[in-house]
Image 1: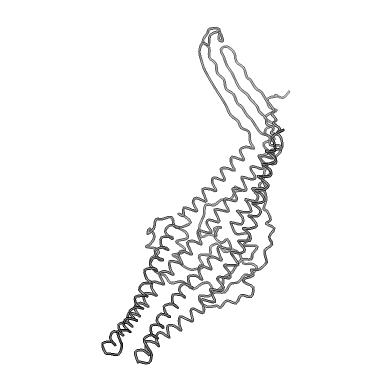
Image 2 (image 1 turned 120 degrees about the horizontal axis):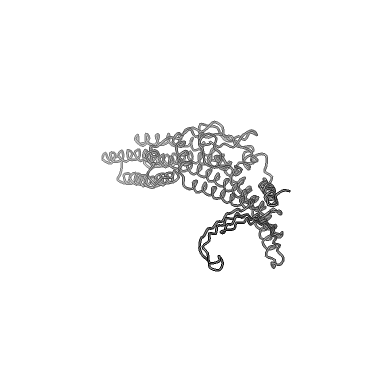
Length: 484
């Protein structure tokens, strides 16, 4: 005959195997149908130059994850790698992933037995209890309790914790995408400020030369003091622009240092030497809407939170059913001169009967949270599509504007040269020279801002597509999968 003490162990192992075979809630459909093509690319006619690059969305185009390499700037490449290694916000997001992973471990542990051991030993005379003799008493017990989870409440908790972990992973990937974009945009802001300072300084020198020419003409009675004051006022106005540009440069430097995980000034030596923008790639490929929706971490995070809300409702619903638990005990006792081996097995059941609607209210609350999570999921999808359409529109129109500004700079530069020549020869007034010089400075400043804006818009396209959350060999981020 088999030992009856082994039966409870076999039952517990069987139920453990069944309870452990759980899986998270699968991918959920948002119910929003995206178009096959981006509406802002349909019929787009963007001029092609060294700076203004057309957009294209072939069906096979994938989301670009190492997009910063297309700018062909080794300083930007170095900044990206350093930011991924040292940024504090990204480190916080990774720590939240580890917290969510630990919470899932707690939920999974509830599927398994709770086993503990107790032991005690003592020696003494306890009067009549020990016949007025000194005796030794020792005891050791092994106790186990197990909620059988026949109605799936703990399994639903594991599914909820797994979906929340996956949501935190996607959120951390979204932080990474945002970090890459912040670094690139701040870097382009820095280069724009440096270029603006250079252009303003060059124009200031030209205006000072004009002022010196006018002063010389005053001495020869060819110009009046009024001309001197008017030219001097323009020199002062141009000089007044430089401090504001220097402030913009310093702000961008400070921002980049913080994004790299350093105090302001720590990496200025790498960033301060001005660099000219390299020409953009000859063609920008954009992934289709369906691929973008699948790639964006914020959409995946919202989908996983919705999946978690489904499991949370299952948890609340399972409270309507009884809790069934197995308990077991096996121990050993010795007391001079006796010894024994106590053991027991038991089955407990707790069934809610009258709770005045508490469980039903919890189910209603979980259902409302599920509705909120679904609507948030849909809104995130819509906003993701909107972000991409806005980024495409901004880039396309800025490219057209940049082409016109490039032509305008050449025209204003030639006009300023002709104005100075004609003024020197007495064919035009000083006002024409000052206006031409001011127009040239404005045109060059607008073109420099547009060059940086074009690259910022391109970063926005890559970011709107969810590019950068996955490592394609450029870096090795520490974001792991919830299925480990």
